[in-house]
Image 1: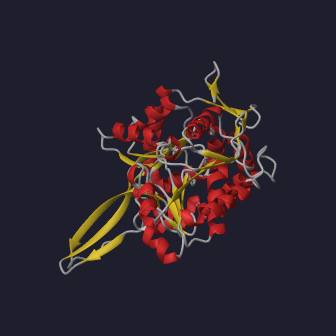
Image 2: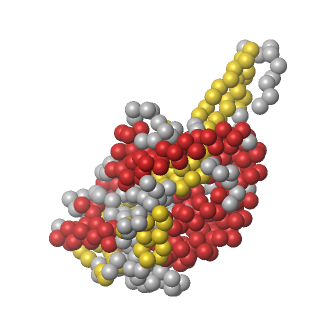
Image 3: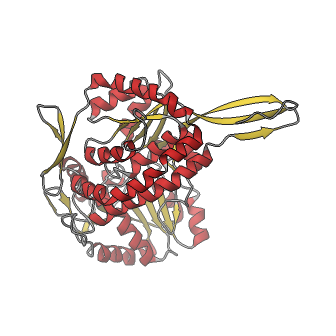
Length: 462
């Protein structure tokens, strides 16, 4: 991304180097007025009540479905996500919007708790104004995961999409703003300066998805005013393949979850620990499946893996890859690069002396290390400051027993880490501070207020 003398933010197609479009950068000095406008609009927005907000927002799902193809095409052009993945994200997002509205509506209902003396009503009220600062790798779904429940709760939102995907962010906000009242959702564009100004402004809640380092800075900045913070941060997800695993199924998931979206997923499989007894068969299967992945221009619907989002992210991955090879890892397939592309790559012979097994890679590299027993697998999988997701493959109860020893927020048994509909998306350790999605995640966007009356008094109206 670059800026011009006219203070415009250019969006560059990582597959072609061409300018996709541009948006005006929001002057930092205007952000306090934007937040003040949100605070003014929040009074009437909250006054609508849950039922009013639900009725007003429900038509948004239909409009998102109507615009899904266009936003998906923009996503492919702007960040290099393969066409099937981009279209899938946008069509799923439209469906999910309708589902999550109802889920949030139910999550925010008042609750009554009664004992022999007191009737207490727990209300879930808005904080006021929330900031949504979102990343580029899922530029529609990730904004939606924090904007939707925040709005439904009665907050107004100031939204800063990534400077890598401003056009998708703008397109998404435009659809919502066809229906939302003025000032309820506002969008600002820019990079670090705009993000810092928004965090330091008169907001009540920050929802951020991005790197652990930036998340820590946001937490520090919000400390003096005790602003509420919800952070979804980086990951270094491990897959453990036990000796009683279905080798072919484990290999399929390892390949898919290492390379989808060019490995630019917070819950990508970045480390694989496989039992010695099945390691050779597993590694050979991973290599066989990796060679089937077609790389190329992401607008080609037969292409599974496109470019990295930009040259900076490509260089981070290549530096880790080159260091690992110098430190003794074996390159089994892939590894070549041109422009912003890196071939899907498989490394074996990895160990924890290598940076690639410790630092988040966020690229299309599958790193495999052999282990001799469950205890070693758990020890290595937990040898990280991160704790977002993970997976364990093996006989179900055996895998569950191992999974319960992992210090991650989400673990999949013979599957990826995502949970059933309605469960939260939650990280542990330094991968999360608060969480989102599902009933419990939606409630992170509200302040509990309790009203208690003597039991003999008439029941109050909600």
